[in-house]
Length: 395
Length: 198
Image 1 (cartoon, rainbow over the protein chains, first blue to last red):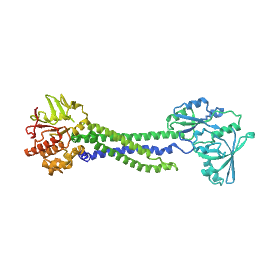
Image 2 (cartoon, each protein chain N blue to C red):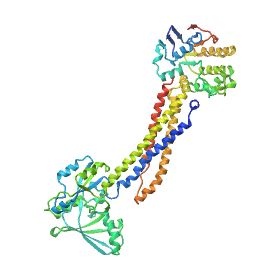
Image 3 (tube, rainbow over the protein chains, first blue to last red):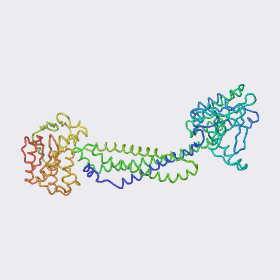
Image 4 (tube, each protein chain N blue to C red):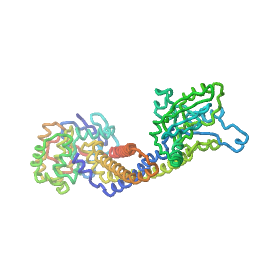
């Protein structure tokens, strides 16, 4: 191998190889940076805070002035539900079940009793992203699990508590509190105890498990007729699908929170990053072209040497190995350098991303490594095949 | 192991393993071309060249490589040495894949052909005659059924020609290969079973 390398390394143009490596590093860095940036901003774009998965949307009908005045229904008919269910971007839907009984809630805070009338709603349990043991009902303690809107806690902590000389409450403190619940009226009244198992920043309702709601509605209001749902929860296949916004707008439906806006933003960011990655890919393709040209030029310059090696019995495989190793080495050098470059730039932009969300956790770089190494290996393999074919023709 | 080579280009020519042939012709008639046709290095001819009945045109690139490694040894007219390799390295680049001769044997051949001083000298600094002798030793490092020598003594004095012939006779007696040598007038001094005029 040493002697073959000695005869074949003649005429290697360091300048050409350097040009390829530089172009390849720039292209690969852009590609992997785009990919990593996309992964790193997902936690911010996806808004995973809360108890709903990011691909869920809470949908209700827009309440027009006419509807308010004339009492038009703002509930979903079965046909409307079926139409939503049949959309391609919808993977499943669930309906909100409202409590048909009255709810009275009281809570002891710092020896003061806070009590208020409330309401409950429930959604199918598979839409709730909470530990299944916490959300089970009946559970071992026979406590009713409750998810509160985070806005309630914020209102208390930042508005009510300071003006009433109460201390602020943390999530953990709330979780340990037992809430007294008085459900229903008259003969159908029951008392229960409940516990807050979590807060939702995206769902403005008080949720209880579906099993509890079914039991309570049938027990406390046995004569009530089942009403059409006023709100539904929709799981979509891709939250950034622009057809979602188009459908909801054309059907005068509201999506709670800024879910649609964030979907549009995520879609825009995805397009932007895809564009940047395409630029990187084009640069890499050009770099690949430069490398192929360089190697073929080198083989052309060494044509006599290759021909003579073949004439003394060297196979095309053996003659190709030094050139293939050059390609592999330069590609892997580009991969590692691009990764180092990406990590350096990432370190810089992560400080900005962390400002968006205090509990922000960046994505891992494993996928970036896998993509880069696969890219390097595929390009090297393509080069290796081209080199082998060219040498086979040299006799 | 190839036993016969038949050439049907202008006139039928038959080469047999173990025998010596001298191909003679004036310059430019086609001696080197014939040798290149036989090895499959060139295909720009009409007719057929068969090795043990198989047409050389049907050999794949890697089959030809195997042929050059095990069946056919060449000493080319243009020698085809690698200028940046030393005398020994030019021999070793063949021997490292055939493992045919020990280093001491190669050194002994260098000594016999008066090349001891050229062992570590790059081929680019050797005279044509010295390069011819290095190329000859390289050809002897290949196991073969036929040894093709294209004007092997064109730039050698008679003494070196005789040394080369003696080495060849001794080696052929052991290995029983056929020799096909071309000559422009100055002939390698060995016994020839047939002289072929092109």
